[in-house]
Image 1 (cartoon, rainbow, N blue to C red):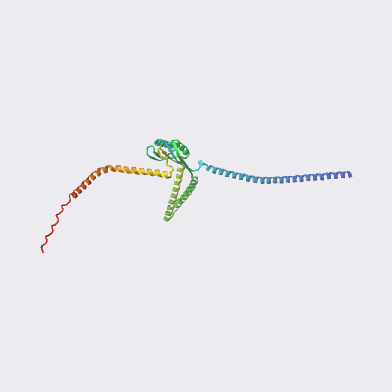
Image 2: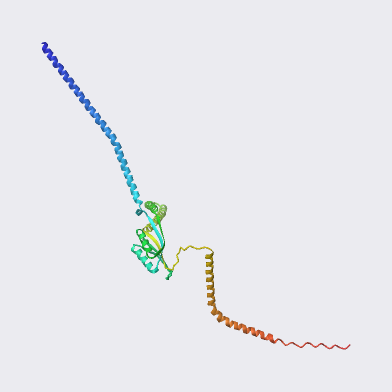
Length: 320
């Protein structure tokens, strides 16, 4: 009995130990699972916290990229070929044959897609001068200038540029705004309910349309000047004097100028005398003869003189 009781007690003890071990293992697994869950949660939180700055950085990079793209687009718009520039030039070329050079200049402008805006010519001798105004496309401006310079000996050249990009952009904005104002006035005009409002709105609409037409005319003028460049070409003959000769000063220069003026005055005087000499001969000789005849007629009576009367005889005195 004692042995059997002891065996039963041992079995009970082993069962309790097994239960305790199972309970401890279960508790360990539960704690491990919770820890794993906490670790994953913390990892998720840490990942989210780490991803937020990354996303913010990506957003900043995208914004910076967009800004850089916009800046690049703005920089592209500031290129020379994207700007509105007015080119003007003046040049003087000395040539042997002014008429032939003028024809060649006209051909150069025509080949470049331009035309002659003005043509003035003086004289036809060696001192002849022709002034041509060329209107050529802006991209062909430099090429046309070089071709004209090769027609003879270039004496001077002056090239000017004027950047009107800002003015063009400002005109575009003003035209857009003015068109909106015109449309607004037209809408108000359709809603007018009285004669007074109708007249007032018509006047306002007319004023706004006039302002719009003025702005559009300025825009067309700028577009014409930027699309077609102006080159003023002076073609001078071999004996033509340069227009930009410097004025000389000094005693010798004054003496030379005075001598030239004296010679010119003397030449004019001799010319006048030569023109009057035939008239003096034709009228002066008969007049001189007439004066001599009249003078002789006056001298003849003076030589004869008047006959004097005899002296009076005194009266005889009576005797006392």
